[in-house]
Amino acid sequence: MPGVTESAEFEQHHRPAAFAQIDGRALNGFGLSSLVRASLNDGHEHVIEFDTFTLGILVRADQGHGTYAAVHITGSVPPNLTAVVLRNMPGCDPDGWFLEMALPTRTLLPGEQVWSTVMDPTAAAELLNHEG
Image (cartoon, rainbow, N blue to C red; front, top):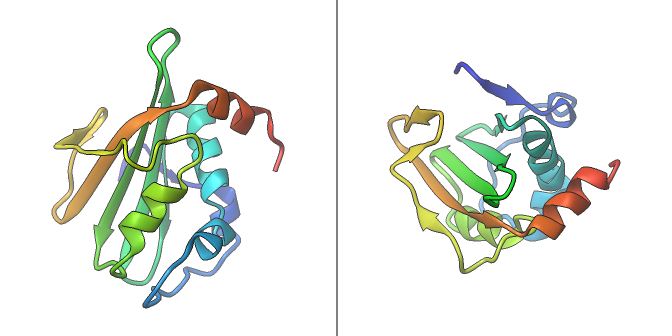
């Protein structure tokens, strides 16, 4: 997929198996903040591939116009995955997500779902200033 990169932190892991239930601790154990930070740094999609689904993050800061955050998921996901990801996205209001028909840089893949919101600029700055 052109323009989609995988975070270096995730490259160190073997492709994790999908699990029946996921919680915020497990999600953060896979480095959600690192994935968000990587995308915030370069404005490109960053993904992690599980056995049955792919989770991707796109965060783009536009000076003076807010910070766009998108989560995209493709494949067969555990029942609560979407809610857990959206609830644990750093700097994003858990109730502020909207379904998208496309990403800014491409159309959706078959079976792909995308949600977007605006990220709090203070949280975005903190993520960029955090080293790990």
